[in-house]
Image (cartoon, rainbow, N blue to C red; front, side):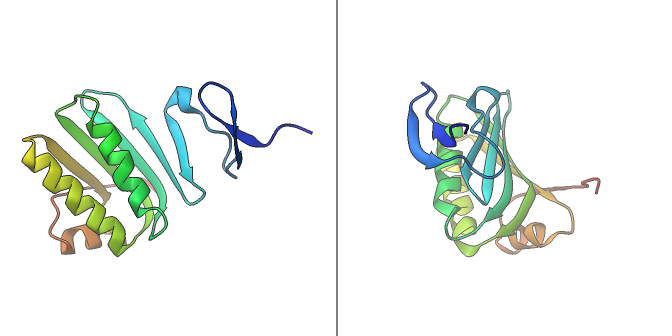
Length: 138
């Protein structure tokens, strides 16, 4: 039977089971941070953080941590791609507001990409956060 434990980048088991969508592929930048949310960081410039799945109460703080981690690597621009997000809870909106406030305080740019006309797009717009709605081929 194959080893189903997630491993650290050095190959040591973490004691957590492998997420249902596959192993942690840190070499390629894919990072399943929660069974319902995955992030993929593309180094830029500009740096692009893709978020997929549900960003709910259980994953909102993780999203904030992922944005902070992507922002700390010395890039002045960070694009946050939410076009693959199915659900965006109030806690996630609060994390996005904090990230925008932090970027503004450091004179860096954080742009949010949303799928035009989706519930996530409407939530981000209603929250007054700057965003760029994009057409997503279905």
